[in-house]
Amino acid sequence: MERIKQRRLQQMKKAQEQRARWKADGHGEYREIVGEKEFFKEMKGVERMVAHFYRENWPCKVMDKHLDLLAKKHLETKFVKVHAEKFPYLTEKLQIWMLPTLALIRKEKVIDYICGFDDFGGKDDFKTEVLACRLANQAMIEYEGGDEDYGAVQQSAPQEQRSVRTSNWRAMQRTESDEDSDFSD
Image (cartoon, rainbow, N blue to C red; front, side, top):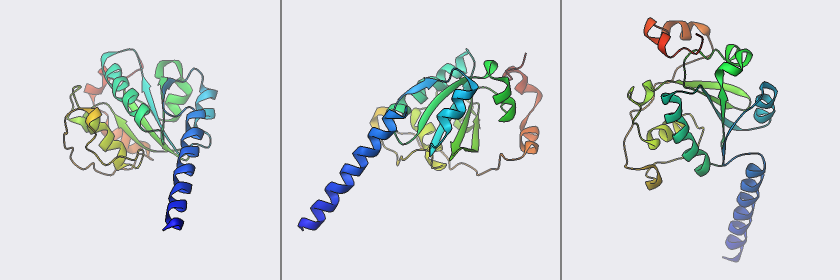
């Protein structure tokens, strides 16, 4: 029994040390990246990072509200925001064409994108829990649901897996109605 207690104490100590390392590396806060070099520096060596590409408009402010809540609760993931119009090289390299877009980055590679609010019913009044479930489906955060801090429980449909590694997918998804959300004027 004593051995189990010691093992559990060791696990708790390691978890606390990991949380301290994450906090020192900028986890637990939702901050803006001010330079393209800073983006790559922030991403380097990070297991999971969610990058919100935005501009100053209502849909992006809605996403900011949700990401700020998630960043504080999920230290395991780094949350940053990038003003898309100020970073043309980065937005082109990552094929960002609609705002808001969340680039889901694992081990310095983009594994998926969340573009606009389509994954949330196409409306801007979705619950933070719905975004949390979407991020958990991609193993970007550790979340099992039922967190009262996010508001009322709302079930989200399982997300379809899709590849975003090819530009053909992006071209197929783009329509004339997307011009309103495009950040290139």
